[in-house]
Length: 221
Ligand SMILES: [Zn+2]
Image (tube, rainbow, N blue to C red; front, side):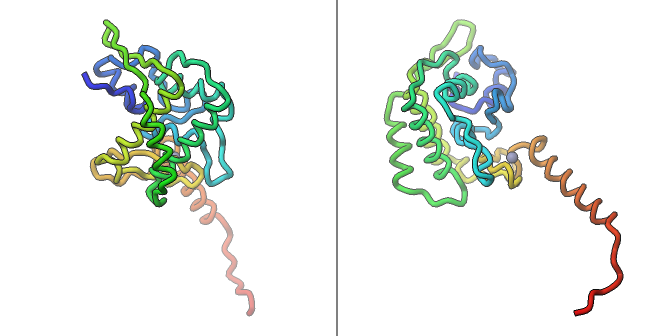
């Protein structure tokens, strides 16, 4: 049995249906549980998505200690997270932004971001605990959870999928995801949420242009 708890919730959920060893807290709901997107295909990128709408001023989903606690629970990392303090919120956001910049396909890595990820990865991660029913639970502090996220980022950034990190092509979205498709030409974090929306908008726009009356009179120059 591999320790796959650090994979994203969506991957984990898919796998749980097959072999059933993922955290019993899983409900099979993989998208936007409690407002958090879990569709990047990777834990560390799901974490980076806790700041949404990056090109629209940003939607902060880690605004409080309760938010951090909810994310830890929703991600499946800590079904019963230890108490989250105010300084954990800043720490989580700092790690999140470092991961985002390092993972973004168009941004150059900075030594400060590398140091941030390494600092967290250097701490003890969450400890997996196997249950007799074949499920695995993770236990540990908030620091341990952030270490697990940082380690997942290092694993992703240094592995074969590093070249498959994409930014969703829907301008409003800005979510990073792993393109695990065979051709490697995936453009959307989710076809339902972003691809179809954009295609529908383009279709409407074309229709409106078609219906618009054409003015044959040329405006004199
Ligand atoms: Zn998207």
